[in-house]
Length: 284
Image 1: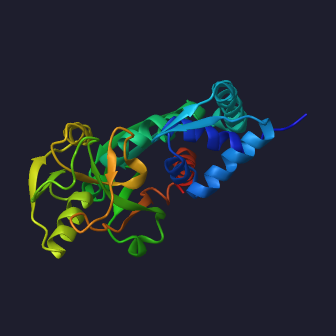
Image 2: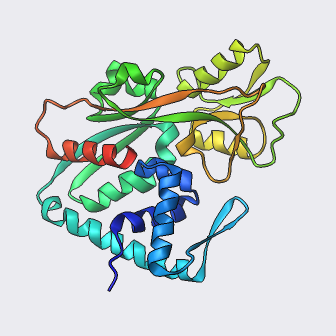
Image 3: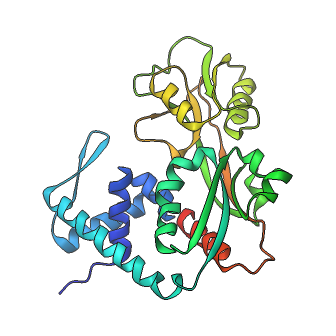
């Protein structure tokens, strides 16, 4: 009887959920080739093809659909068993601040899993720009803050990971359209906005802010409609948008740091410590 390793099943389920080897690697802390190797190992153990590539999309084979359902059940039971002996004794409230740019990937996946594993912990989640979260009032209002950092090396103590910044557009957008580059950005203080303007100014590329939108949902909608381009961390790019390759008009944007600040680290609160470790493990 063969035993299917949990790490292979988790890699498979994550690839399916995000329809991307690269995004699965970002979330699981592995490179894209490493994730591909894990999927190949799982297929080899089962002697079945689980994923079929159709252009940019990954489709489940008939065997893949069956294994996907089993894998989700197995992982759910595993995670439940691991947390069973500790979750009942962990209680409390945690005020978590996360950057609005990460809300769509953090809330339904990572934060949702924590809430399910520790039902006696009350989560109060607030989404704001990193600059707002890291202000004096922002720190006083939260126990944990996950924030973007312009200079990762300066925040090495709290750094969880680094991510590449990329240019993003709607699927029908033509990146070769005449200048200026039409920017869809969040208000002043947004790291993505700052980086986009800085690199375009550096190469003297004409640009224009066509939409100034405070929330990520509005930015995504405007981008999807082909009204302009924006900048996002690579691991957070939605599947319905496309990454624009680097070019003379769209230069390299560099990286951004993702840091986790435990504002109450000197306070004995098991719920805060558990969530902090959960976030580090999930994002690293």
